[in-house]
Length: 151
Image (spheres, rainbow, N blue to C red):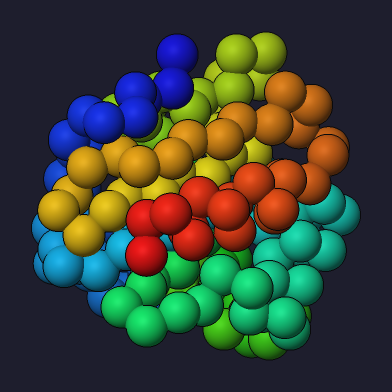
């Protein structure tokens, strides 16, 4: 079951595609948009993550966007470079953070669900969206509407 809206987001540290530590608590005071996706190089993930980079519909002042999947930092590095993705990709190879947020795929437990979690400036979960059908892209209109409310 996904993390509840209104709850405090569990802190975590993951490595970026550049092997740098990225810590959620370091983002306090910013709105954080976390885009969980099953795997680098898969068709839906590739299309949607590239589009978000080309048309920065999630960007805004005081906002941070990150992608999260189980892929390794080296896979993220190659994927980001090849597809010109503009934001950091975080490696969660053992799905530890994915499990904290309740986003482990119920039918394929070695990947995450396609999901969006927005954390507000105070560190609380402001929005959660999980795609019922993994191959379908996320509902960007709903994500944008949530961001308009959060700031």
